Length: 417
Image 1 (tube, rainbow, N blue to C red):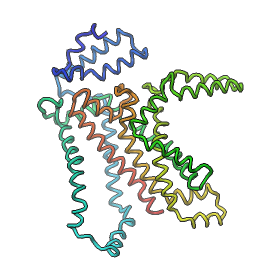
Image 2: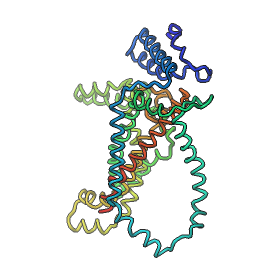
Image 3: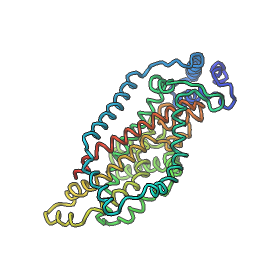
Image 4: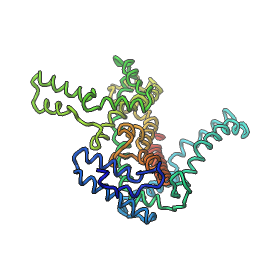
């Protein structure tokens, strides 16, 4: 198929190391569509040639941007601006004044103030390391976002082109942003209730609490790569234990003469492709639950152990049930820990990378990219350093604004309680 379409390769960069880089994403998407029967072999060649024509046109007019997503870009800009204005308004209203007004005075009265030179001695080395390995590279990346550079030749000034291309023309960027929003919103709705319920169960000393504690904490001993490989094997269509479990459940249901619709539904998972483009992100929810439940359980359990027992004893004397005690005593007093957990989950959803990257064999199609995989692909596959830096800047802004919004939205309630 490729041999029949030699013009498709005219847009390749001159350097051998970057050959076919500009067509890599198009080739990945078309290969997926061809293997799943969405396009014929002839359509594969035609669309590959069309993608090459787009790259040739871009090479002829490198500063041209086709504004296909003006509405989305305007909506995102308005949301960010409104959030920043709201954060400023909340700060001016002094929502956190009651929390911060007395702490410095009490600390100064009881412990005294540390001399500046001693403070610099403690903070200075750590700040120097942080600045050298985090701040300076971040500032450099911010500067690269305004350039056009392949990492080999000379760097050329591109102005706002990379940001305009991302926000106005790139279909992959908006698809990736939607996937990040999914990971930011859906997994926490599962992780937080499960971790909170298990923490309450362990805190109450339920039967088997120690076993549950060990089982739920075990995934935290594994890194993200190891966990990805485990679930890659589990989701394997023919030999993975997930499909095998559904099929075995179907066999058991047929033996007990369960309704035929239930048996057929369970047997339908034989050979089911969990990690296909259509199913990937819903398949990530159990993985996030498995990986994040233990960490959040530790946070919630530590907070629950800090609640005075006298409050529960008084509630029992008043006839409050365990459920009422949980909602009227436990939840209000651990609200700040819930906020921290929510911030971690929001940041994790926006920074999602390794799971998607590994579960798609390091070659995700356009519909399953996250901003993290899109950035890595732009840098190491397409050799677009400026574009990758622009994605990193946008991702940083989104993480910063989202984290501040979550903290500010919940801060007043936690202080009042």
